[in-house]
Image 1: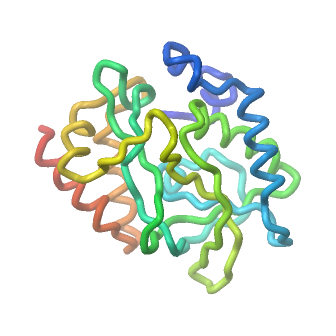
Image 2: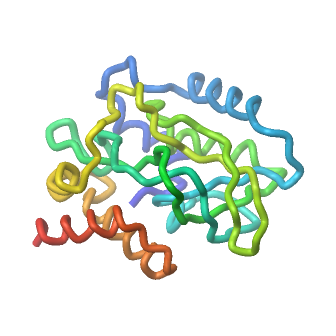
Length: 219
């Protein structure tokens, strides 16, 4: 399982060292991306919020002072990111989750603690952007208590070489069922996500269909 210690130590990045250097982002490139993202942030006084739609739901590894279930209009989940490290390998690639334009999704909004926000964002970039496969985007999430907060969401980067156009259940399920890596199987990720969403009464039809297909393909 991925832990904060593995990310902070840099050990997490070791699994990406054998990839094409053109897509492996070092700390300097990640820092530039973070700076560009913060410079583009809308003016707000509610703090920095992160919208989690995947493992950030159950394994955020961030210091935050608020966590709420929320709705993010205009997006949908998509297992459109090829995965060759972590829960996959170059020999048996899996698929990782992203979001792309769509109707709306349910997830969790996390507000970073102000004094620690920049350090937490550096950690988040190291976790999510070792290959620059996402487009960090600002959008408005609606918390279940009615508040609207501008949040950071990691969206699919359609121009990235690891992006896959076909994220249908029929295509993705066999890849997920077969892939695994140092942090577990790809199937474990999909099934855990489905379980978390179902338990929160936030079932995602696409994820649920994929989880059902993966269960049918795995012992």
